Length: 345
Image (cartoon, rainbow, N blue to C red; front, side):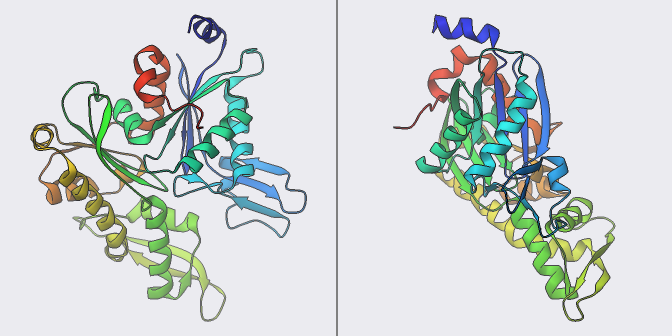
């Protein structure tokens, strides 16, 4: 432990929110220094990485016959090991800088419902990317810590973290998860729902980036005071030529109803699993809603109506998990025992 502490003085330790949609990197004692889309563009023939992050995302749905834009994580876990490793290595090198001689320790947030095989894939990718030591922390714990909740107290804290690939719902007490649900229905599922609706209702094919824009600009979980309309461009399914369609916020809300109801059901299931004394705490403390899904208009109000609990949204819900990994890094001695996963046998 003393040797590790000495090494820590000379290494630039990293906390990583390795998300399906975006990757955020926190540098110990500095804060969040990187926030990039989790996308890699490669040459199809040589498999050489051409672009990573924001530049690669711009290529989604726009590549030529030689290039391919890949999202190496699906539903919160690694789906393409080689590309995930290349992406993580790129981000680590950007943040760690070569002048730091000691390899960094890495804290990586992972979905609470992943398997040991999926954990091992994350662990191996981090090692190959240059980590000296790797700690895995469940995303709900990281999100709760990053949102400013003191989960070490014998009092219930509840967090609903809706990312790109997974929605994590958890009740925590005494630094541990006491009830949780991890479902692979989140932001990406909402995008797919919009794609299917526009195809069926307007006979128009659109890509993931366009669906994401529709969700961000006019997506909602409850009726708006003033409904909005957005022009959406894509390919006509009948004539095969480019066309524009008018899509309303009302129809987008109906399209999003199914994935949103699955998230609400996960919240209800978690509450049903919670011990009575902890449930009593939640009546007063409510739940914290974070992740990209927290930005969907009306979702917080819908959860309040469905559960009867107050819902709090942090100032920057997108960075809660990354900030939580940073707090872990800066308090390793305090959190190491309950949080460290380390190598899997």
